[in-house]
Amino acid sequence: MNFILLSGGSGKRLWPLSNDVRSKQFLKLFQNEAGEYESMAQRLLRQLRAAFPDASVTIATGESQKSAVLNQLAEPDGGGISVCCEPARRDTFPAIALAAAYLYSEQGLGEDEPVIVCPIDPFVGPDYFAALARLERAVRQDAASLVLMGAAPTYPSAKYGYFLPGPAPAGQGENGEGVRPVAWFREKPSEEQAAGYIAEGALWNCGVFGFRLGYLLGILAGYLPAKTYREVYEHYGELPRTSFDYAVAEREKAVGCIRFEGAWKDVGTWNTLAEVMSQPALGNVVLGSGCENVHAVNELEQPLLVMGAKDMIVAAGPDGVLVSDKHQSSYIKPYVDGLHQRVMFEEKSWGSFRVLLEGPHGHSMTVHLAVRAGGQMSYHCHQNRDEVWTVLSGRGRATVEGRETPMGPGTVLRLPAGARHTLRAETAMELIEVQLGCAVEDADVKQF
Image 1 (cartoon, one colour):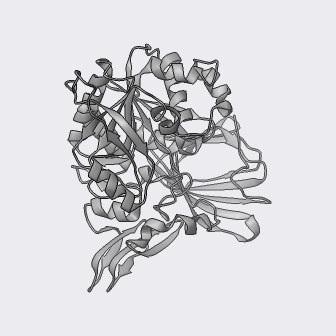
Image 2 (image 1 turned 180 degrees about the vertical axis):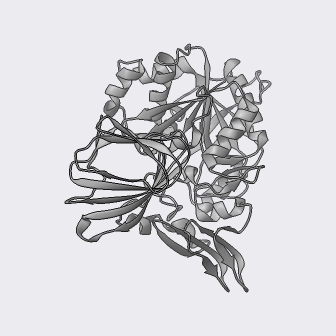
């Protein structure tokens, strides 16, 4: 099977743990069977691998999430996922079209091959993957040019789009996979409208669909005279900034759907996240007396004490602290949009960094670096700042202007402005990095 997993989003609704470069799907808030914490993306990929061990998986994402994807999802054998990175955010249709071109010209996938597209972050069980197998079989049977999967609604939500399965054409009936035509689509309605749609038999549009690769390449040709990944990448800005639903699904006459009856959650707000958390408190948290229906998450070292609270979300992370009524926590995005601060935590392909202290006037910054075993930074330099590395734990090798230096606990290394440098970790490493200069800013980096 061939999968395109969509990884996007700006990370505003699960602030302060998520941010512009750390979207909700990368938050490690879920326990697996071994008791280890994993992210939504890691959870879904683990489940997909269990269901389809030999599946081809391509993750469509943007530059801002590429490092987190590689850090969390790159598989040890190196033969697992591929990453198709869009040069700019242009919604789901351009992202999927670019990924389709990538499968065709870079992966050598034939135009007759079925492709299944789904989000990287739904909270689902094993029956979801059985439904994906039904979806793929429906595409192979040519049940429709485009086949959607709709989840049976559990309540009238204003957060999802809806579509209505229509009656099977006269004399045809459903095929073995239960495919029905789609009668209509409705974008995110009011709760009152949603209740009416559900009464008619509408399904949640959960953003899962299948098609033969050549079908989407044909639609792409209507926008660009291009078929290869490199051509589409170069002309990406010419594609419309629009969703796949609007550009393809709602315009397609031969669109079918299958119904999924199992549990499906788009965990996009603190309120919905609380519903699937395995325990009410994560991290260094104490829930004191009088707490009722409270969920708290703490990513900081300092203890978090909550007492006498009811129906609350409390979250503390490097970017800030949230204290909210559970219902109101679904409406934090406008407030977060009004906050203007640098990203204090970011995952990199080699590990992660966390800002500990910003000095006055932008002339200094102290950062904690965590480098995974085998991780290696790019070979780069900074023009406007010096850096000082102090190794706290682990071992590796630094290369500065072509000269290699072994690094271990207690090693201090000064990196003057303009000096090209990199670090390769032989074991997991932790370092303190002090940046000093006339202008300490993220943009001051040149890679070689």
